[in-house]
Image (cartoon, rainbow, N blue to C red; front, side, top):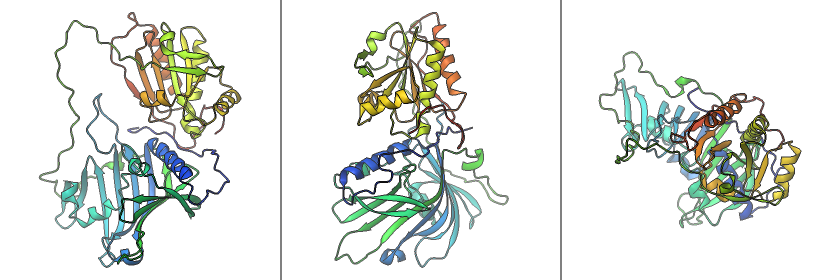
Amino acid sequence: MRLSWIIITTVVWGWIGVSPVRGDPARARELLELSAEALKNVQTLTADVEVGATEGFANYLPHAKGRLIVGRIAEDGSQPARRANPFEFRFTGKGRVTGNADEIEFDVIYRDRRFEWMNDEQKEQRIRFERIAGRDNEVRLAKSFLLDHLFGADPLAAELKSENMEMVESKTIDGQSCDGVKIPQGKTGRYMIIYIPRSDFIPRRIEQGIDMANSPISGTEYKQLTNVRVNEPLPDSAFEMPIPPGYSADPNPARAIRPAQPPQTQVNPDATPRRPLATPFELSDGDGNTVRLQDLRGKVVVLDFWGTWLPESARQGMGVMQQVHEHFGDGDVLCFGVNFRERDPEKAKAFFKDGGFTYGVLLGGDKVARSYGVRQFPTIYIIGKEGEIVEVVNGYKEGVTEQHVIKAIEDYLAEDNTPGTTNAPTTQIPSAPAGAGGASGGGG
């Protein structure tokens, strides 16, 4: 498959069955942070979308219904493209650009700041950058579906900077109870409410309005998602738009953003390329002993980052680690689960024990997770005998990830030169489709 999938499933969270207290800024922030974490794990998403406005806003803003497809863009090569957004989008549906405008259909693709669509009036393909493309009514409607603050490089980053968020009354959306987080926007009275379900923490509704008693315009703008499916396989044609018969190709398309070129430096052609070194760490294990990475030189160290708060699908790395541990034993390969963002270390230790995991556990790994750039789950680091990063494995596919990690370690151990001869690769493992069983061992 062209994309990897990590299935976001139901998580057992301390809030389940407990109604949030209205106001409660601490709980609002925690819910928003959990939503941001869930969004970081999104590889694909499909949903039915409704966009509209109420009261005075209804005459001036778009109204549309349709389908949204979101997919994370797979990078080709080691140097990532300079993208403002790592996702591509497809928007299809019908709507009006304002309340009184004629209804039109739209089918638009968006990636790398470019919109692609078919101009039916001119019978011509159009590929334009945002500023120019926005003059077309089809693109204006498609942009109303664009939730780039959710599906972007750093989801909900602007919202999480707010110091004044609060819980508001929940709403039932698509059969799910969704807690509302209200976030002020600037000092003009504008606000945003994000409605988040406890099942997967993917927002289902976003409302924006103005809290001003003397405002000449009242009402809200809203975007609502239903029939949401996360990290399910997409067909290769999901983001392809063939030119219909009788239509001509865009004579002057906006060019795709090319990958950034690494700086050219003088190198010694006889020097042996070395893998980058892993950031040192010092953490406590489940028995209160201090574990330092530098003390483990001469061993292969395998790290998996986990928390009891993660959805079960995001904890699949724990099952991988158990199999790796059982395969190699306690000889040249040491496996550790780095627990982070855990309020109660005893809960983590109990979860680990109850799950039947017998490899090492390290507690309080928040700084380590940040320094290692963990943004996706599972993320498994293989660190060599000299502290060098051998490989980073992202994602999970049952029966594949385990064998991939084991083979990577065996290949490393078979190398003649311990420090390695290549830069550490990052491997993206396609995840199993929705509904596939996991090897995480232990519930959420």
